[in-house]
Image (cartoon, rainbow, N blue to C red; front, top):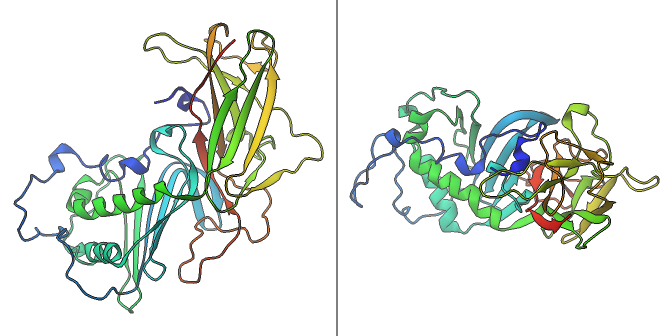
Length: 363
């Protein structure tokens, strides 16, 4: 786990990567079977689907874990929130992600999309509809702090909707759903390769042998469609939410030691500057400050921090679950892909937390 995850306003939780694999124990794994066999009770048949016409459907698969951070209408946004929506008519899987499991660096958060062909849509449809839901074991809750999962499958043919809610610690239930969970996990992973409106964080430190260093935090839209964010220099509404962004510096540790971070607050937003920014695809917001690291002025010192001299590390962190403090024209909702209507256009309000990779410099 990277050093910044120990900050007071960030906590460790279960994320996207551990939805299926992380909640299946060794005891619950099914031993390998011959390639051709009949599926067991409650098991999904993963053989290729029988050729046939694709029937219309919509799938929503959501995961929520960690603290409740903000509300968006009837939706509660948790630290680790992921929402996959698949629409067969649009032939698309869209993923909304607020934070990566393990607080991985250089990973954007926001809105992602993956195009699906008829074969992929049919495989997912068969995996859900062939599950014998009534025969599955009860989804007993183990660890109450793990993610809560919700599945909604809405056929477009007037057939009954499938709705299930269960904890990621319901090991026996999830083991029985193993192959279907693998399908769902793959469906959630594929869109990550195609961010369409997503925010990434970059940290930079100007080189130099003496005097103040110029440190820069960049908030970059790595997608193709616009995003909308609050300027991170705008104070958070709730004090306990912490700053919207900050920089962390540490003397470069030796061996397997962890960095001992010192927090650098961003400067105040200059008077007259906009509080909300719309960043086009590829656009960015850069915030720089000059700081003499040999002086404690401007630092909120960690009492265990060593002297900031010699080789140092820099990391930038962004966290904003509340979303823009003011809605922009045509701003999209949290789940930008509507249930049935044609996809709307407009800036996407990114929510969540993202972490830059480490930049090295000499103090």
